[in-house]
Length: 326
Image (cartoon, rainbow, N blue to C red; front, side, top):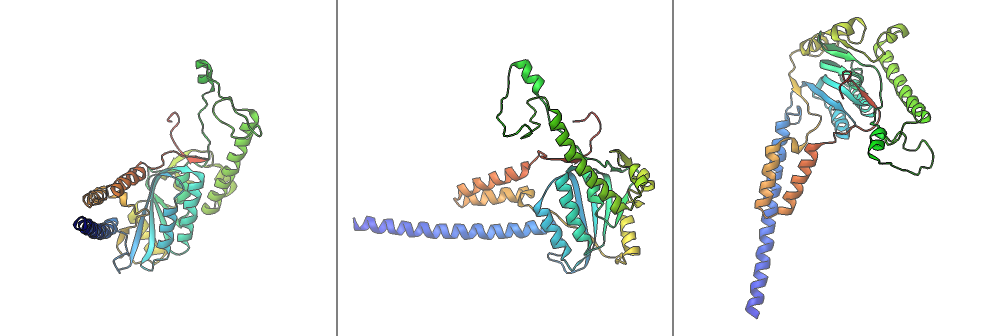
């Protein structure tokens, strides 16, 4: 019995030692992967000491993003970043997300010279983003504008009636959760939505007029929701110059006295570990090999959820799409 007890104690000690070394190995690997991820992200100024011009990229649908806010604030406090070039290629997104991005870029503009280069499109919320710049450059055939706001929702009341389904609800007031899409939208609900849209639309127009220094007549010529080419936008004062990144660099050198010889480096607004899928898979494999299967499974689930992303856009939209395209 005593021998069995000693054997059990020895096994427990051995198990604790193995667990310690496994955890230590995982920590070392994770630190190494984190360093590799930081290097791969090429966030200028993290390891280097040379001054540079930061290149930001805003693409796709725009929505709220606190990580992006923090990244822009950090860039504003960087002594190495001497100027910022923001490439915009977006049809817009939520009005709140676009406003958040505009505010963040405006704070950055107060600390660094900031110029926007419109690649394919800066429409609606994408144009709100561009308005934060000191100078807007676009190509001849880029699309800009789409000054307007919309609220879209599906109404399936006719379909439900055809299949004999009725959704009932008890509300504190008739306008609670209206419109819900399960019944025809009442005139009162339509009026309430229209008031929200017009209020946000007025804010959008005021932002355009203030940032682009437009008269009332000039604003009226561009505020009907249309998009314009870069060539058209130049004459309408929606942009300042036709060109590309080289044009932006020339403007920074001439107007802001930024050294034209400074390197331009990409600055990632989101440094997510799951962006580097091969490192993510390697970390999961190491955890499995170390016997930490539960932690590896949680890492896989976290990575899958992060990769999936929140594709739904909730709330009021500042978003452009061609007519007839849903």
